[in-house]
Length: 164
Length: 456
Image 1 (cartoon, helix red, strand yellow):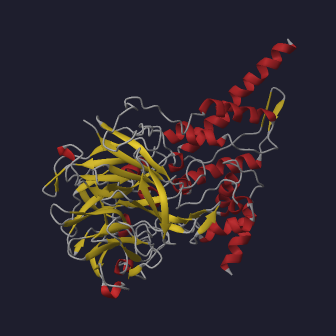
Image 2 (cartoon, one colour; image 1 turned 30 degrees about the horizontal axis):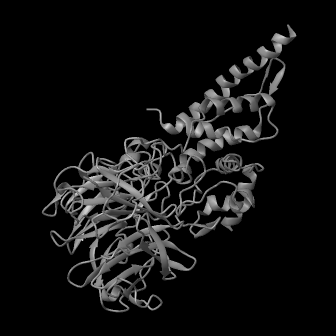
Image 3 (cartoon, rainbow over the protein chains, first blue to last red; image 1 turned 45 degrees about the horizontal axis):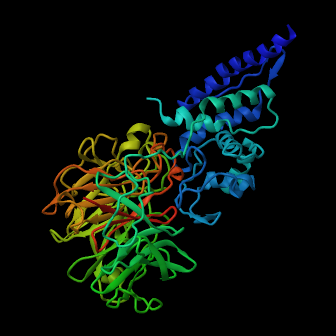
């Protein structure tokens, strides 16, 4: 019985998470908010109601609406025009600088790995602190990136500083 | 309709989340989601209909086999002339077969590379000069003209077509507006001593805040005073700028491909249409529509023409000039009687970077005096598939289109499944005709130079 349980449990888990996380993923791609990976006990295994997972999933929705067409589905950007978001210092480095790019836009020629990128990025200051925190957390944790979360409070602080 | 983006790209990428605190079960799920949704990207599809053993016969020596993977009409084949490992933009070929290639970015300090033909049909870099990047290059009346992104220079040629003083160019035009986008200056000359220079709009659609969702157009779009059009200068007068030039045609967002039609002695240009209708005005345009319009337009230009940018764009399905949303449009309001119509309207966002009227006799009758257009390929059709990494052809008769456009050379990208332009192996950019009537095509990803020839 124990052996069967070992096999069956992961199958049930997979089925469960597929119908929740992945199911709601599809909804997100149709632009519906928000995504949730609910916290729950399943066969004595806790699936965490993780802040970071939620932030990333919510951030993905923001990314699709406001970032995707320039920075592309894989975060690779467009040669000569739109900078890549893959493991660059802009993405993985100073969070305040990254937040500021969202709030103020970016209109400087930038060289990344020997390539120049020069398209204008508009200020996306109409997004809420939470949306900006989410999308930056998402970008910092997809496309091969791995970095700490960006919190809404951090966005709020940068926004307040820029308003001075 | 479910987009490709939804089917694979986006969901597949989501599996890249690497949050160490996740429970193993979630990790398992994500792994599973990769397995379920991963699809091959950037896989080169085999193209088998082309024989790789065409013997060209006309180049002497052993002609190279066609290893390009290009899809071409029957009896055409292509060879790789050179792989420059540089951003090859426009090019010209002299009547002796010498090739000058303009690079977007200088390679080892050389912005123009010189290639000499080899017996097998390929070519070898034999020199370089000009320490500036740029796109435009043109041959006329014993001079080689080349542009940086804010100036135009020329170099005198000797009888063999070699540049006499490569380090001492004459500055023909200087001080042109160079935005952060559409900064390239494509050039062409007429038969009456004029040079035509594109000065692209530094903004996508003259919004108060460029590319910001909902931002409206600047009234009167003042940038049209110094950009967003074609300027005419004298071909042999030094140090000209706006004061000495004429705004020949306006209302053109950005022109990269242009050529002088010798049949009717008229300038033809290919405009890059505006981007991001859906991103900027989602209330009027869904993603699918936005991926298809506006048209990439070919215009025949006369002095004083206005093609309507940024106030209108051309919808190839409605066959109408539409009021731009930045200026009060809603995807339905048409504008009539104010601006010229395109001569040919191509699908949206394909990025026409090269235009060439074919004057040779090597290709069959159908191609004589017709227009080849090199499409660089789209980037802003997301989440739909990208397209347009090809060379198109439009038959012409008496200086006017004589039939619908068709794909001439395809598969530069190496795959039909392009979600992002980075997945394209090669992207067509410049076009030129060789002395034997072969068609040369540049690629600005890796600097590949192709030569396409016809064989009975």
